[in-house]
Image (cartoon, rainbow, N blue to C red; front, side, top):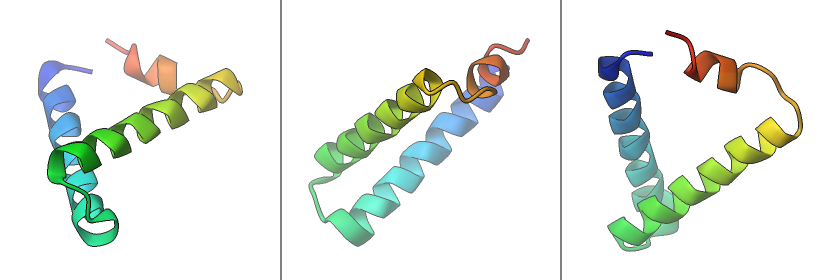
Length: 62
């Protein structure tokens, strides 16, 4: 994954998290986006610990 793809992915995810927060959670923007990002990160760690393949290999591709 090159730098451009990584930046696009992070910007897209943060925009989606902000939209989800504004529509459903109604928390302050900073707290809502951080809480959703934390939940998303924990979900990714949980899927990796369950042994679902693909995420780590996809991220480490040149």
